[in-house]
Image (cartoon, rainbow, N blue to C red; front, side, top):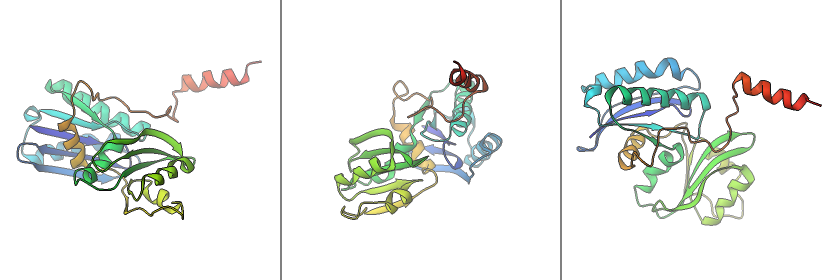
Length: 232
């Protein structure tokens, strides 16, 4: 099966075509960016499809990151994925950024726990902890950095994500230090594809995976909130 993987959740705009039968990543492109995903994504996907020497009609599935991440970035990738899937009458599945960060480590049958951590700002992080075989130790959540550091109780971990460095800097001095600290601005797009191949379309919907309400609110919501706070 050919899978088109898309990621715009964090500080990258990325796409790839994965052939699950040969295990080959046929084509991929990733651009580091904090803004501008909406303008960059469709041309980038077009280049990836051209480089893969396949056609949209040859794809068997679309996989897209669902968050946690940037509210605006998530919607760009999800909208593109849904549109391509609808036009091609093919399934689209969602993959969380936390799972995509952990996947390459878990795939190696790691002996240590894996902490996926994403900066949620204001001294908070999005966090998930799994054992070396992928079983959940701490389910996805948003937590103050101080609470996230309690994951040190699981022993020496692999720490990965765009907040891996932040967590490592504040790691408790009396705890066993991390085995590896892998600061990544975005997950590997290849693993978005592989996870997309593994999940069931019925249980992995392509919709935003929010662990808290987005900071950006539509004008109507901001006005309603302001009205409530100023009402007598």
